[in-house]
Length: 153
Image 1 (cartoon, rainbow, N blue to C red):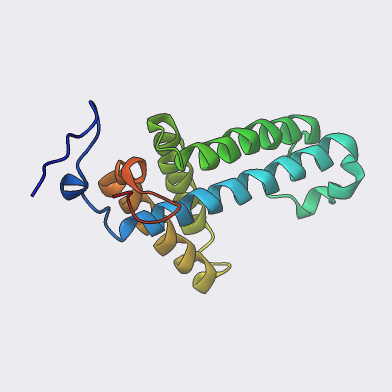
Image 2 (cartoon, rainbow, N blue to C red):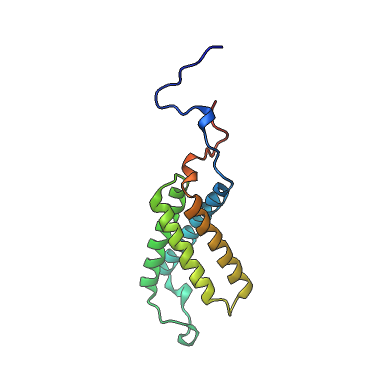
């Protein structure tokens, strides 16, 4: 039996720790955050470029809104959330923090809509809780997860 010398800095295949199944939820969270960010950015662009699309009678608005300010908030927030979703796949800590905050805000907003859409709001709160749990408890595992297959031997 011959022993092979491992290159400096290499991790032996036997010491490779398999990431848990929660990595799938982290990938789900990343894709959902990217999609959500893109949708909000598009909505912000529409509000900025053609605010006639969003005109509602004053009696139909819950809150009085300036469409330009609303558009900029959606555009900038959407870009940040989309970048966080993509960066989450790389295991960046700032992306985990932004995605947890976005899921938290989503849960709060969903709770406020329980009266209007109880089933959808409950589903959203449940998904937000799962995403928050996956990112907080298992978020570091995305760095060690090989998204292209098993570890090299």
